[in-house]
Image (cartoon, rainbow, N blue to C red; front, side, top):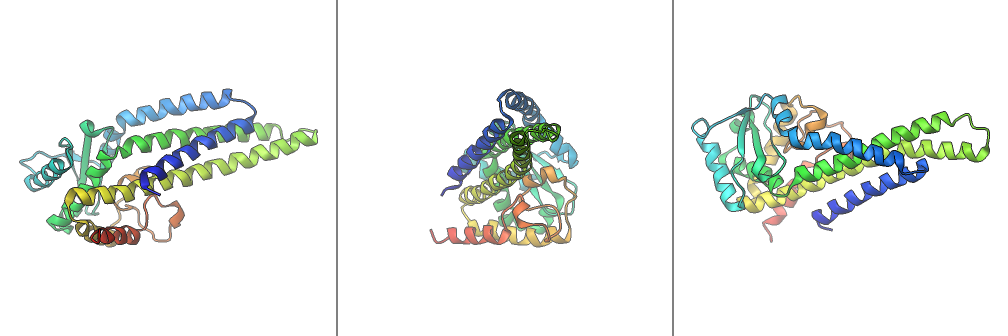
Length: 282
């Protein structure tokens, strides 16, 4: 199944989870209120998340005179991809990493750390920047926002359902007690399922960005080599990133291989490298 189809299916499952919780609650009013609130909250994030994230990492916008080599690579890739030139930012950190943000290609930004500029060769850096431009090209930020809206609504509805189940815990009627237990189970399972689905969407978009970026750069092996270096270096010098923004980076910025693979926002680097190397046989 293609990554685009997989993402659409996972978004559909998130929507079904909302319907499931609404049915468990016995009505649609609470579901509608939670959806509206979550929509407003996430629309704010959609419009202003780029400014928030860039300021969170003290990213400074650089001009072409300040970073001519960086601009030359991005201009080359924008020409190959048909994208407008994004704003370019530098993050003052020795940890090698990069991310893209912005609500659409005309309001996009690419940020790289000073550490990644020192670590990678020009070809490897081109592979990384192509990956980030692929995120912009594939509208991954929009998809991530939709997923966040749905997952946020599920969490809020689950909390409402949990309170309803707790208040009904003292019901004497056996059917009401069974209904309350069922509501409590749904309120626990649904947010966990939503989190796993949201992470699966993030993983699918990473695979797609790797593939798209490799086509922009014209050399999958450059990105594969970069990922290998970044994975090792980020373990030695982790970036103190907020967990809510960890999915934005090209490799997971937080240290600790003990993290459960299931709850990682990124696919295993080994799998990404294997897929990229396999592209050369096409």
